[in-house]
Structures are given as C-alpha cells and as structure tokens.
Image (cartoon, rainbow, N blue to C red; front, top):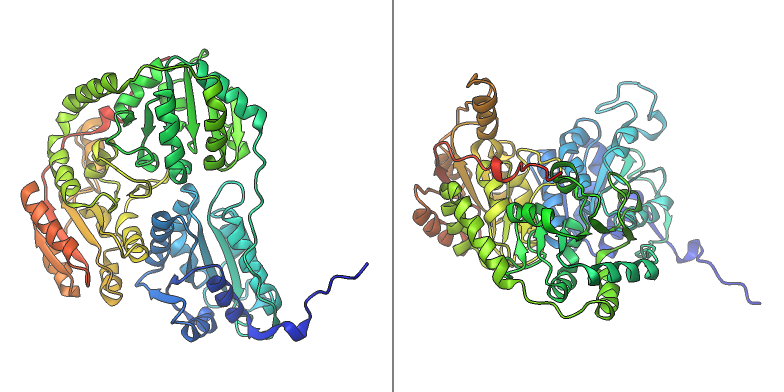
Length: 551
C-alpha cells in the first residue's frame, strides 16, 4: 500500500506568526478586523498593513468599540468577525462586548496580545500584565488558545474559527505574546476545517412530528438560534397553523405581517392555552421562569447545545443540532401525522388588534417607532438599546426579515447599541442601519463617532434624550418612594457634539420631524448622522413584559 505523502517544509512558506494568523483569516473569508493598536501587537499590525487590500483594519477609539463593532458585524451577517486588542486593560476594556457575544452565541474571534512568552504567569510586572489572563478569557468564550510558535499559528486560528460553529455557536479567543508575533518559520497555512455535524436523531424527529400533528393548539417560540431557519419556521407555522412568538433575538424569523406572527403579550396568552410548544434556538427562560410550566404541556426543543435541554425542565422531545436541517426533517415527517387544520388567521388578527389597543398606553414610544419603520427599508437593520424606546420596540416594532432586529442577549447591557450598530453598518453597507439609544447609553461609546467619520460609516443614530438613566429612575420612583440617586444626567448639546466630529446632526421634536430627519440620514451614504429627540418621561412598558405566571 502506497504511503500517503505528507506536506514537508519545502511546501511551506516562511512567515511570521502574525502573518500566518492574518493569512488564515483571509483564507477563511474575513475581510475586516476591528482593532486598537498597542505595543504588544505592533507586529500583528505590521502584518495587517501588508494585506490591507484584502483585510481592512477598522481602528477604533476604545477597545470596547472594537469588540462591539465585531459583535455587530457578526450579528448582522451571521459570519465570523475578528477584533484585536492589547492584553490586560485592552482585554478588560473589550470584555463587556465579548461577554455579550457569548450570551448571544455570536461568532466573534478576539485576538489578544500577551507579555513576553517566557514571562507569562511569573508576575514580573510587565506592561499590561494580568494574572492568569487565559483563565479570565476562558470564562468569556467557548474556546481559547495561546499561540506559542509560528508553526502553530495558522492551525490554531482555523481551530478557533471552527469552534465558533461547533455545538453551541459562540466567540473564541487567541492570545499571542509580543515576542512570538514576529518569530518566523516555515508555515503550512491551514484551510477551513469543517465543523463536525451533529447527527440528527430521526426517531426523535418522528416523535416530535407525531406530537405536533396531534396537538390542537400548537405554538412555536423562536430565539436567536432560529435566525438562519426562517424559511423552515415559516413553512412549519403554516402547516400547523401555529402562532410563532419571537421576542428580541427571535424577531424577524417569521415576518411580522404574517397573521401567525405574535409578540410577547399575546404570546403570554397563547402559552397558557397551548397543548404543545416547539422551542427553536431559545432558552425558553421567560416561559419557564415567569409564565410557568404546566404538567400537561408537551414541550419539544431544538437546541445546538445538548446540555440546554435539561437545564430547567426536561422536554418531552429533545432535538440537538442546528435548527435548519432538523426543521427540514420535521417538515418531511409531519404531513403523515398532521390532519387538515382550520386557518387561525382571523382569530389571531382579532387578538392582535385587541393587544394593539391595550398597548396604546405606549403611544409616545409607538409614534416614534412607527416613524422609524415607515422610513427604514424592509431589509434595513434596527439596533435596539436598553432604553424606554428599546423596550417598546421589542413589543411592537414590526420586523420583516431575519437578522434585521439586533437586540442584546441576556446580558442586556446598557451602552451596547451605538458601537454595535457601527459594526453592523460597516458589515452591511448595502442597507441602512438605524441605532436607537437613550442619552445615557449613547454616551458609553459616543467617542466612536470619530471612528464612524474616519471610516465613513453612514450609520443613523437616534438619541432619545430624557437627561437621565430613565429605566433606573423609574424603578427608584416606583419602588423606592421617589428617592432618586445616580440617575440624573448632564449632557452635551448632542447636535453640536456630533457636528464637532464632522457628522451630520439635527434635532427632531415630533415623529413627523423624525421621519424627515431619517429620510435625509438614510440618503446620506458618506458619513454618520445623529438625530436628537428630546423626550419627557415615557409610559412604562413593564406591565407588558413582566407578566404573571399561569400556574
């Protein structure tokens, strides 16, 4: 038997560890890296300079901006994105965004510098040294590694990129020491490694089909894991006449114009009536923790992480793997068990109309959101924020396509929106992107207006200004006898602030004025636009979000 020839050094190319990492990123289809330079990564940036025509470096004004932009690009495209920062404070400055990427299962690669290789872990007090940096990183990502030599660099990068799509998707990290980036050796570049496919349990799919086919009032609940299975969810919903609840990351999986598409308040009612629920790429946390789990309720779950199934309530049927192929199998099996079903369109349209009337309490927020929806194209992206308008948007904003409503995961961290939206707009220059922020959240990363100007990112940002951390103020008013502390804010003139960077900016007092400002902003594709909307205290959305249990 002829022995298979293995590559030798003669077929390798001499390059540095930094060059190997950069070449591997390019080989995996990345075309942008979000980064802030520093001495530990000088040789990485030198390698990036050499390939700037193939891998663009978008440099930011703060490490959190770089990481949030990578997150936004990943959420908007569903594809791997990378950012680079120095160790110690650089890593920690980016950590909130990396943690958010973890909570959202976003494919973000963090490239993190290190002190000299031989001194790692010895506590000598090097610039930016931090004790057990990899130990910290491992708590923020699904996969972490340390590049120790050039020959390892390409494969380590490929493994990190593969890990993003192995099991539960999520971020990864690679560290490399200051004196390793520049070391050179013969390197064989690693081509993309296919993620191991999870075998679909066909018996479990058949059991799920039988249960759903027999159900009188089935319901589907979608999370972020369903974003790439919109066609399958739509077909399954029509086949079962099952309403589909998408809240936050599940929005847009089923077009909001479909009568079977419902949001949280009506979803709460339907949960109490359903005899079978299919959860697709969702933790079902609100349902299990807040709404209650009936003994007679059949629950079928599809999740990429097999450990998720038993975390709170063991489902009747557990299906592990990517939602799309599992749903395709389910669609093939279901017709044999699913009888003719009467349309539920009229029923659900009537119930949605009743809820719209009740949600009229949020009229000020709704009027502004209607203005945004009227001007934002169907495929335009809406990036919400931890703000009164954002909470209302999760309930009432119509979403027509997957990956067009970006909302933070369970971290729900104030200040994520503006920089994340910059990354989304940079990655999707073909469509308008709008970010909504309160004055409090916007100021977390407002300095990245400089990045938007430097790289000509035409994001439109609407800052709803109530001169407070409005959500916290409401809690203090309602639960603590109006004892206000730490909530009132001193703000700049946001229009002048944005213009000082060279951005376009204007103030809108009414929804109609906001429409005009948005129209002008979306038409402008060479620079960012900021629109300030002064608002007073807005009606509370919490009665529609924090609903009581049924059991």
